[in-house]
Image (spheres, helix red, strand yellow):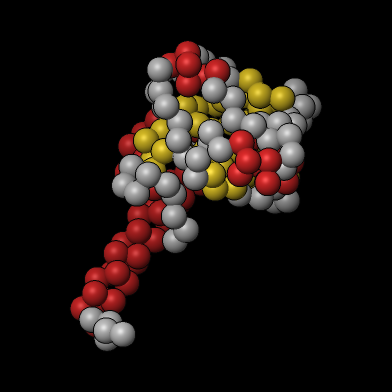
Length: 165
């Protein structure tokens, strides 16, 4: 077993600290903003770059908590993506479970059904836009203990899949 180079450890620690600092700045700007649409548009590229994602979709809970509607998204997918709140969609499952979910291959039905038997990826929006979703991270957005939306990060730009860090 080779000894770990202290310089490499130092570089990784510095990179992680830089990442955390940038994330805190983005988070603070989001929390302080009174105009969500303007701030998310302004922060879109910094968020994509920091989280190394190709696209973002932000859903808000609507229709008395029965539906998720896209409030912001990158790309050419049609406006107002509407998803019923159910365990059959990734965003719906995350909203109901209130837990983040990382999916390395959205086309792997076996892996999706291991999360929940009804869970599927809807390829409809990829077909409409010509985009190819491969990997995804979805996380609930909460106000206190109540889910008010879902943030989806689509396709990691470096490794192809999202990694925990």
